[in-house]
Length: 169
Image 1 (cartoon, rainbow, N blue to C red):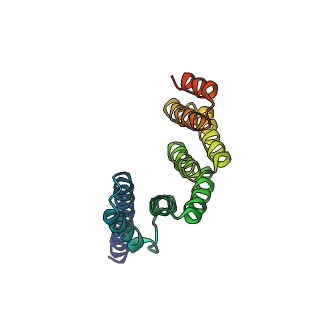
Image 2 (image 1 turned 90 degrees about the vertical axis):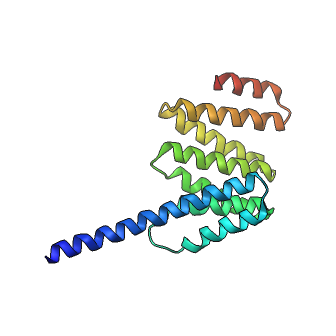
Image 3 (image 1 turned 135 degrees about the horizontal axis):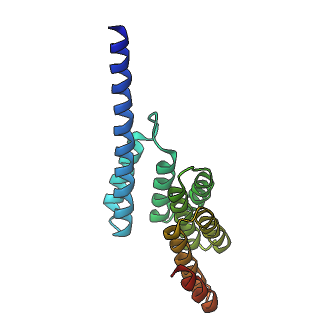
């Protein structure tokens, strides 16, 4: 009987952890959507939802870092956005899930680019592409090349942009 109670207790705890992770993932998704539509009241609401679970056991650091990055960039806090971009890039490099690592590096690159840190944007995109290419993740390679083309166009380098777009085909 004691073993059954222990298993049930662990199972309930595990379900709670999964629910927290899902709440955080949903809040980050809502935050990204609100940021894209420039709905600042929804941005604040979604970020409050992130903050509500921030210190809970078992929440994904990757999602917390992405939320901080999105929020800092959306409110125009350059120092916070760049700090979170560096943190997300570092965290992404150590993730075992390649597609998530590539997304994190590309998210970081977006913020670096947005706030004028072109060298770090290029570096993050290069790392994203290298990781994806090494593991033959064609979709992730193409995503990185498209972003690299966008960055090259921002720098008025049309030859590089063409080469990246050709590579993304």
